[in-house]
Image (tube, rainbow, N blue to C red; front, side, top):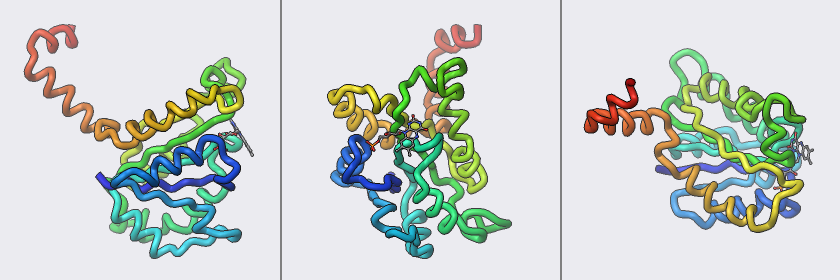
Length: 201
Ligand SMILES: Cc1cc2nc3c(=O)[nH]c(=O)nc-3n(C[C@H](O)[C@H](O)[C@H](O)COP(=O)(O)O)c2cc1C
């Protein structure tokens, strides 16, 4: 599986977590990583043809970013607006991204318990990330379960370090795709009558 990571951080040199994730991606086989801020430059302008070809030569696309005002930093929006064009990403008979996968890798300042009903951020990450989920749907990509690392404001150095391996395993896991996971579960049930009886009971 070829993975393309698009990193959207305004300044990786000042980053605590996204920089270490970026570095780990860059050192891993079968992962292409792109610092969108460097590629787009101060005007956030992208070579559309080049970016579209990159998408087409990978199976799984990762948007990696720090959570800024409940969304991504503006360079990712600039990239989306320029690259996901009519006739390429959507439009009748011309959805070139159909069948590819989209997964988000996000760091937040707020702790995990704040991203629930009743928490101080009120809404869950799944709720706040709906525009990305719908973008995947609109373009025919399969939206995968996001990786979210919470609490940069309070988290210990060791937890940040440990997140690198967890994140790498997450984005490389074929079973993140719900269809692949479901197929394995179905096979298990098919071959195990006792398990099947328990599940259907
Ligand atoms: C402009 C700005 C907006 C932010 N908005 C949020 C937010 O909406 N929710 C949140 O949990 N953290 C927010 N944060 C905190 C960042 O998510 C956190 O600093 C970042 O994940 C750290 O990543 P880094 O070390 O790679 O820079 C914000 C930070 C900045 C600078």
